[in-house]
Image (cartoon, rainbow, N blue to C red):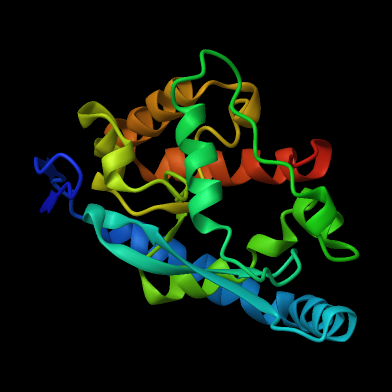
Length: 218
C-alpha cells in the first residue's frame, strides 16, 4: 500500500504481510476467554469513571495501523475532557522524542488526570478496551504498539513496523519499554516483524504478565 506524504509529496510505501491463521485464532481464543472473566472489572471501571467525572467513559482516537491504514483505538478515559484537543500537541512531543539519543519519555499530564487515573495507567487497566479492537481485527494481542505519530513522522526504514497488525503488547514492552530510545523501540518492533511466530507471541504474552505484576507502567 502506498500512502502519500502530504508534507514532502513523496510516497511512503507500506507492504503489509499476510496475518497467519494461527495469530487470528490465538487472538480470538484468548480474547473470547478473557472478556467474560473481565466483564465485572470492566463494568466497575466504567461506572467509576462515569460517577467521578460525569463525562464519557471511553477515550477514542485515530491511530495508524496495519498497512498504514487508520483505525480507531479504544481506551478507558483517564484524563479530564480537554477544551482543546491534545492530539497534535502530544504528537509533536512524541515526534521530538524520535531524535533524542536516550530513553523516550511520555509527556507529563499529571494535573489533567482524573482521580484514580494514574493507578489505571500504572496497572494498564485503561488499555483493556483494546480487546474490542482485537475482536474487530484491527489490532492483535501482540504487535508493535500504535502511537500518535503519522507515517510522515517515520523514516523510511521505520515504517516496516506497519507491515503487521499493531498489538496491545509487544516486544519492546517486555524489553525495557521507556528505558529505551525511540530507535531501539523501532528495532525491537522490526525484530518482531521478522521473527513473528506462535512461540514468540506466547512468550511475549507470558512476559507481559510479569511486567504488569512486578513493574510500574510509566
